[in-house]
Length: 502
Image (cartoon, rainbow, N blue to C red; front, side, top):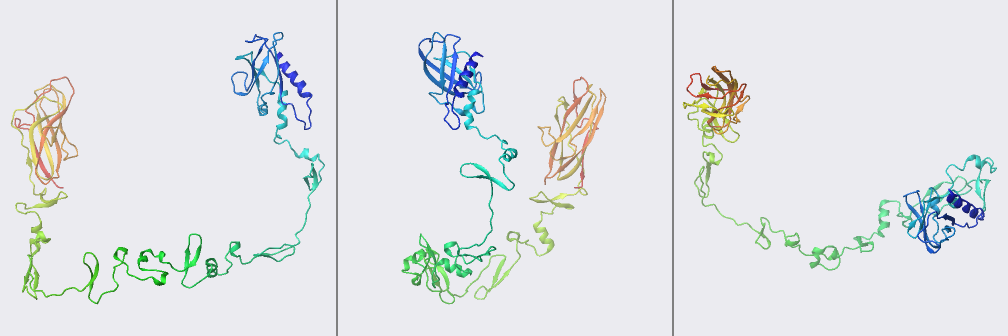
């Protein structure tokens, strides 16, 4: 508080005596600080630095000034003018609170001092007019009358009447024209080239004016600086330079093949044709002659094969795009697959090759080849039974009926399927729809497994499918075992495929 009073009083004394009304202000800030704690050096000349910050602690350093001062040992008082060696930045006083930090040597002494309001008067000379500070009420006090405006008379602003007047005459320079008087009519005449026009009233006249003339046989040609009327020059047709001199009136010569021509100067005679000898083009008369002998290779035959041969076409075989037959049925037999042994079958294709396929009406059921080998299945995850069924092309309904023997005390659901392999229990890709025939075995009783699997053999050949046991779900703790499942040991076991319509 004491430091702030000292700073405030000193500042007030300084600026209260400063001249105003346009005089130059002393833009320094008197400052005193009492050292309540002993500085590093006392009673001797030492470096003292004064810093302006925008915060009591921390903050941003805005201004700094260093001086060499003799600190009084008796009063421990620092007294100086801030800004006398390094000018104050007046803008710092415009919109922020400032604090002064005093550093003796390299040690900051005490706390920072907060600047009182008086120093901010330094900024008043630069202060802008505040928004909304000029009002109608304030301007009315200047004594203006209705219709007057503020007018600067050379030394000050004062209310004054604004003069009026009437248009009495209007003149115009070419290409503009004026009718004159107080109500003039302004018209536009012909705009010449110098004013950005053409000086002409027609399109052709405008072209002639811009071209600078209209000499017969000349054309507009750029010379690197201007576009002017000029005759065609030899350099304008570089491919003919070797044969010409002067202007286009002297352009003559023959266009070589290398330049897109023929290298010829005539059109030949009637009946000739243009031919090449490997290096140039020439007009050539075709040679003539007489037929002396004509022969033919089957199916072409030639009779009287001398000067007046008769050529005939025989029967065209398949190798030459024909059928090799002379009747419709013969032609069909020639291009279709062999019909021998295919009575009642239908013609089908796999997208590449045609073949005969037995229909459901002509195909007969197929019985699976069940294995006669004693077979004990102990792998509940999947095991090949040893049995299979071979089916021809087409769609089949494979009916499965198998005995589930009573040689284990397992409650289980048993699934079986047909695979393309003896080493994998993956169901065949030819199966359509459900891919298993399943059954339930409960306790140590006989049970049966029944179901049907639809097979579509899309190939054109017989294909064998292998009968697999697997994917068992058990419902109690037991030792899984099935004896002679899927073999001929049980009379109930059978697998029959019935043909289906496509």
